[in-house]
Amino acid sequence: MGSRDKDAYNGVLPVKKERGFTSNDVVAKLRGILKMKRIGHTGTLDPEATGVLPICLGKATKLSGYLTDTDKTYSCVARLGVETDTEDLTGKVLKTSDCSGIEDSEVSRALLDFIGDYDQIPPMYSAKKVGGKKLYELARGGIEIERKPCPVKIYDIRDIEAALDQDEKKVSFTVDCSKGTYIRSLCRDLGIKLGIGASMESLVRTRACGIGIDECLTLKEIEDRVASYEGIEGILLPPDHFFIDLESFTVSGQTEKMVRNGNIFKVSGMSDGRYRVYLSDGSFAGIYGVTGSEARLCRSFQG
Image 1 (cartoon, rainbow, N blue to C red):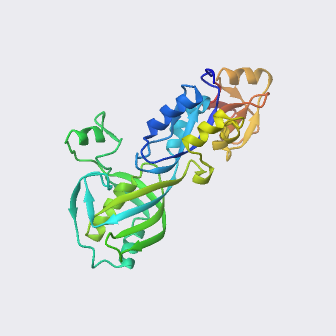
Image 2: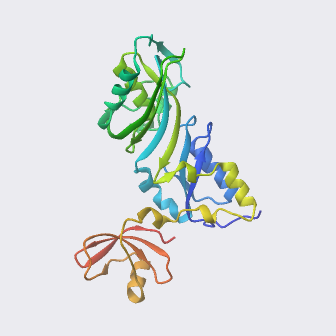
Image 3: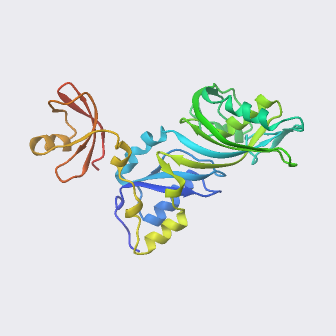
């Protein structure tokens, strides 16, 4: 297959990340598969985690920051009675505890207590930056620093199933949460609340940016589609898909010229708010904010 133009594809590619890949690994592999450079992910997913990783291609890379800020859903298994330095089972075990006195109902109540606003201390092994340094870089150097709690929100925790009759005590659950929530740290805090410690055993992101895991393809499936007549155009989500809740209008003539240049333009009879704006050829120009009689560019998707 020959070299492609850098913007051969424009849209969001719903990828199902597999275990062992970092988010940056996925981007690097897609650059090779798609023969294009302008590719970005929408937020890191731990190497051992799997599931939904929306990837922005071409013009849609302008969506990366916006999509990172969306809510997410995870399916998690926590191991009870085990504390590690990474807050998951890939790390060094720091302490083990006896879980024999813990009841299923106690575990469920403790989990449900986290629903709502929650000040969460991020894990040392994370990509969060403090003083310009990523925490995991400090952690790998044997440095642990004090981290300020970050406000996150847990919208719902459901499908709770405790398996306490086994040698390895576990609890599985589904969680809907805000951006910036570390599920490893939720498992850690569950262990603290129960007084026995806990670490994350497995994690699947089942929904992100409005994309469900059933809509996603693995890297191998994407590679096979590119190599065949199918291609990936049919599975790409266009940038305007993520603003479908906004009202829209189309511009033409002199106003279209102003929009192409990103200029402010006049409107009449429109309510204040944000709108999707399209050019006369049907292409998506971007998001404009209307205040009074003026429309001002919020985010352009023109190249």
